[in-house]
Length: 107
Image (tube, rainbow, N blue to C red; front, top):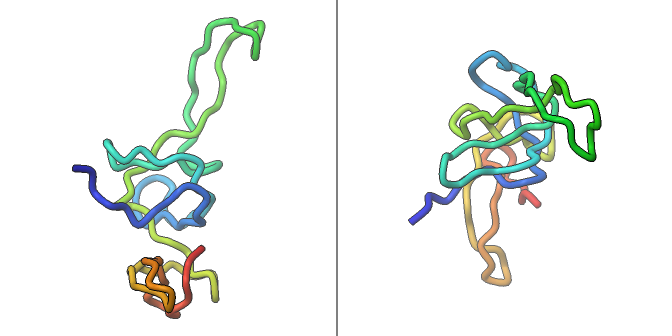
């Protein structure tokens, strides 16, 4: 069984440790099996590519590397600061994520 993550695709996150510490960005992709996320514009690495339709010459391309989800904190939708995420039932009985900092529901 896979672990339930506090990070989803499209979330705004803040990096709390590693080379990209203090930076923030939007999550492009989440790998639940490896517990890693790819964040837009962060952890850039050089990837050697063969010629293909997208890049006819091939060569070295800059690409985002993954970051472990334990190094990411969600950004509070109310004040834009890092916050922890909780889960609760809303008035319709649907489980939603909320910011533990402000109590606001995270979309």
